[in-house]
Image (cartoon, rainbow, N blue to C red; front, side, top):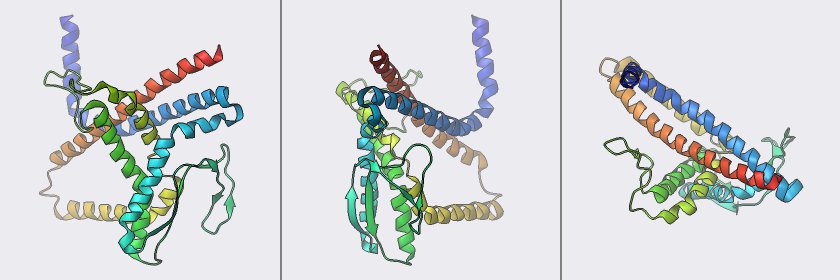
Length: 282
């Protein structure tokens, strides 16, 4: 027994120098695993929908995620209101309405989608001045607003469920897991897991959203590349690279933890979906 413990300590000691890079790569691996688990959950809910609603069964996933869709559209709307001084005006808001949506290019030509039919779940239409820099900036922030709003709501719901901030690791000095504050009300767990699931299912901007944000994302990417290049060429001799690696590792560790929370929720809802399917198939 003592030998096994010594071997484990030796392994951890050998792994220690590589932990920063493992933590950084873990963000990509856990994100990919989350995509897999969320896709598996959707397939299970689609199957449940088939048993309950037959041909309308695939719509169950979208109705299930209605709160997330509403937050997605409200994030667009709130961001557009912030750009009201620059001439942005909302003309219509549809928070949730499942209907077929033809995919269109800029010139209006219909692009037929392959496979699953494209559906419109909500819509925020707006007008803004043409040819101004702030118009492109506003388009960009409006496009990525669901991502920002979804992350903010995820952080709030995690606090509501556990009493901890999302960036606080729930371990005490002895590394015992403290996933919820002892004095925190238990009833918050009745609804927050579902809300976290639906909010994070709909926080990713749509293809049209990314298209609208393309110029802002391009400008930010070029600015970052320029800043990194200047720092490397002009200040390379005074940059503390170990400190930068430590900072990046700390940020990645918190992202890893958030992704683990979401994967854990996916597994919980997958188990629940399997139980429902087991009953439905009998």
